[in-house]
Image 1 (cartoon, rainbow, N blue to C red):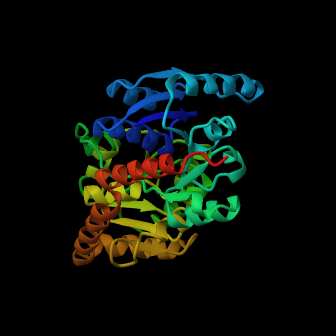
Image 2 (spheres, helix red, strand yellow; image 1 turned 90 degrees about the vertical axis):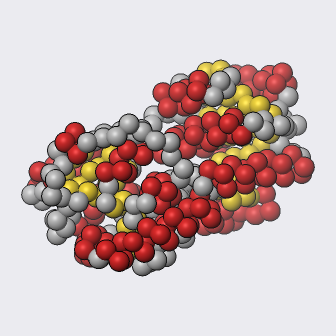
Length: 346
């Protein structure tokens, strides 16, 4: 099986991290050849070099889109892939029509379906996202479910001292973009009432506003803004809770990563979270924008050890059933095989 990947990797994000990790996992499976047309990105290029996956750099710039599409057509002819996999909306929008090869568009979020107009098939990371794609495209029979995986390699250990974490404070970790839709402001307000240290790992447009908010709320001394981090496994080793108070989500990979590492998940009822989290069983859920409800759930997990152990055990079970690397990669290979069997439809 030969797969040609189109990847527009502008900046660091959970989506590009999962994309890069998936390409490496596919290579490690030994069941395919891969070639990548992509923009330069440190995370992606590191995985490509690690797996000895060949690639060429492309700009994916709109003003010369027709030239890039000619280049993609030529690569399809010369490489003769069985599938062209278009990761996220920018890359999918560059997929040329009528390539003669089945193409698959990957949705990690609620992207505009029109950007995937030249993809024969699509794959979404949650059931609600699959439904959305099917309704918007008018072709639910061409949409597949493909979870992200939470399996993480080990990182060198981190110390609490590196982040200024006192010995007597439990750690609430959030791994996310500093963006309104992630609900960082809700978590900051909730932590006024929670005796814990807040470790925020990520960058984004609201970062400075959140620094100011932490100061104004009087919790600046127990909040660390750690910036973008790729050592997610080591960060989770420091954490007592993973918080995900998002207002809107496709399906955050940090959720199964926390389950894999045995860290309880406390989240908001955003679509991609409530589809998988069962309140009081494998995680805790509060309403979107519910500061008091989030604070109550955080306190419950920190103070009730029996609840904590129950969440960890059930989270591990959910991870093993749906989000392990072996399960996710096996399902992706089956999706490739199915669309190869069906062939191009556009």
